[in-house]
Length: 260
Image (cartoon, rainbow, N blue to C red; front, side):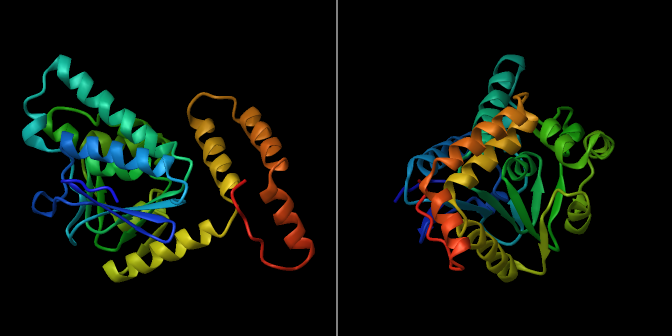
């Protein structure tokens, strides 16, 4: 099993549990943590015995309360661009991961932490959680894809409000905006709901799940989404999982998907 300085990486059954583990810093995303996320998700993508990811933050105060400001304060035009591009690359890998990635958010998801949550496929939050992109208060803007993903999820007008004011919003409002899938009462309920949702997804056909992720992302990345969908549909039609799924339906039994 992988070991990291700033992350916890554990596996139960076929689910990887990745935990941002800098609670004394409210799990702020420094450069080292971004690199470890890159390594962790490379492992997720390549490991055949991992079928889904639940990403969370250690402690009960924050999922991740932003980037490490001590590092950000040292940036200039040249290394600032590289700083942003590096984070964008890692978060794009998470977004395009062919296995479902669920963010379990307990506490603050601000700045880079909010951007990380936005790169996941789904989000569940406790009622006390808050979301925001306050970078404008520091004289900068989000650099890890936040201006793009927030706009995609909540729409142009609300994205402008959040980005231009830098104000954060509670989990209940985040759910109303479609930024969060579910809001639960506390950390115990968060763990329960996250696992429940992930296991429900993983009872479906793995190949179809991977293709759905590709198709949804195609809507936003400039690809021909309809053609991506048609190609993915055709690929599913030649799979053993397709034959198993249709046979199980006709035989009125639960399908036993193998991912091929």
